Amino acid sequence: MSTWDRFMRAIEDGDPAEALRISEQELPPEQKPAAQTKLAETKQKKRKQRIELAAVMAAVERDGCTGFCIACGEEQGGCEPDARRVECESCGEKKVYGAEELLLRIA
Ligand SMILES: [Zn+2]
View 1 (cartoon, rainbow, N blue to C red):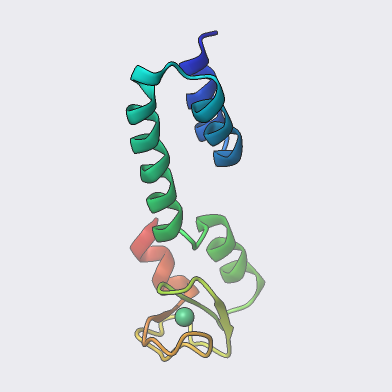
View 2 (cartoon, protein in one colour):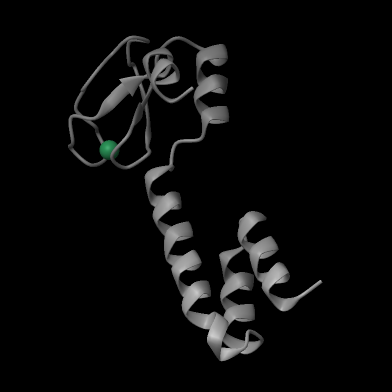
């Protein structure tokens, strides 16, 4: 397996710390810019996808009153399943959606 392959595997495994280590210590200089782009993309994806589909589905199965904030990713109780744009108790953004509503949007 090449160093680049190990780098990509670390990213796919969700281990950016290891990917960063490989990119800094092992990758040849000509591959570093590409590695940095990959790492930046990975970070961005993480930020946007803070709400796990599995967590939403679990909330739907558990009870009908959990919402998720798409701005900060926090769960919020006492939320109607079809709630939309409810104010978030954590960040104050009106971006809390009921679990079922969210499921329809992200599934
Ligand atoms: Zn929030």
